[in-house]
Image (cartoon, rainbow, N blue to C red; front, side, top):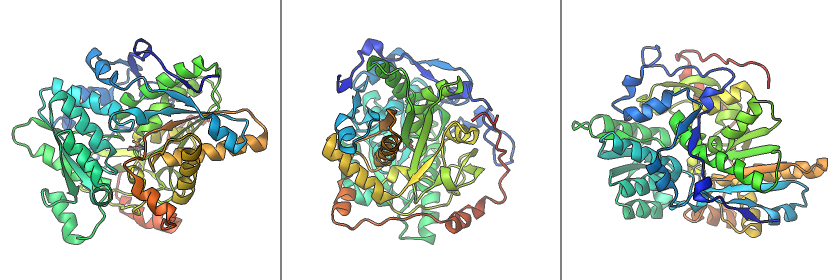
Length: 462
Ligand SMILES: *Cc1c(COP(=O)(O)O)cnc(C)c1O
């Protein structure tokens, strides 16, 4: 039996899959500051219209433009691996597969949407993109994409990651982007935070406010903002992962998948792998679909489903999602990409519906899982990805106890070669565990009191 399966470029999917078309209960609409649903043109100062059309689309399949396919061919299709060595180490009868998104130039799945977003912006006549980055993965992916397409790029990087991962900044600069720590003194949003808390580690929510502010205040109208996760069009671009994986599992001779796992920060790599399988589940397949989050930022497992802003300065519309509150600053754990207060509205609605069953795992268990993975499969995964590895190991052990030959697939969203600081702390026993308590969640979400209520609508089938 082969250890990994490739697809040819010809076999790569030519369309993205849009879960919005198939959700048994449709998503609630995003709301403006007045509490009424926003219209697409209200987003026009922030995003180009071609991406806004994708954001609100109800089409099941959306054609990938030929030029975007050509950009993706630089590293796609990505391999699907069978984790024989990990299976052996665990003594599990489960068959474990992983989709290796770490092979993209910037090292994670984020390149999939980065090249698509840069291309659509360029089509629309945009010259410069602003964005935020947590761990630096998104910042490097969008810098890479802007370099390919000749766009200017400015990245607000969450301060704690800026300090911990200086080489991510060097990557962005190598691709020609500008990268500054957030909160910065360059925006009103950044200055306001610094005044209150000069030593803040920063957060994705703050950095998003800064990047949007810069985009909408550019008087030439040629700057737009770009988001690496959370929004519907980002989930859409990532579905190429799951669509490829399904073809590859078939080539491996697998007729059925039992468990699909991805780590979830804003939800995009998880959605990318899982949405095509969620489609099967909606059509009757019996699949367990698990988004995994840090116990220190337990959005899906402990936070309420509410209308909340995507950022601290409330620049974004109110989105229907699980949220710990837009001004929540998570503990400075090493999985920077999972330190986000909210969650993709598409993933959130799928969780409300019961199609997905979230899980929260603490940092130390995740690093232990990552160590075992490195020693067996060889790949040093990103701290974010270690959450998916830890959940996979739990499920494989369960299969062993039950004596069942389950098929488990997880998304290896990125490598950790730029994240060795966290590994170093783990190796020296200097890493802490932080679990958010009910009381802390209650405190954090108090600011949501005045927001419009988000109704939890579901069919009750799952
Ligand atoms: C950004 C990132 C994540 C988290 O973001 P999602 O949108 O939830 O996928 C996970 N893994 C890696 C490697 C990342 O770079």
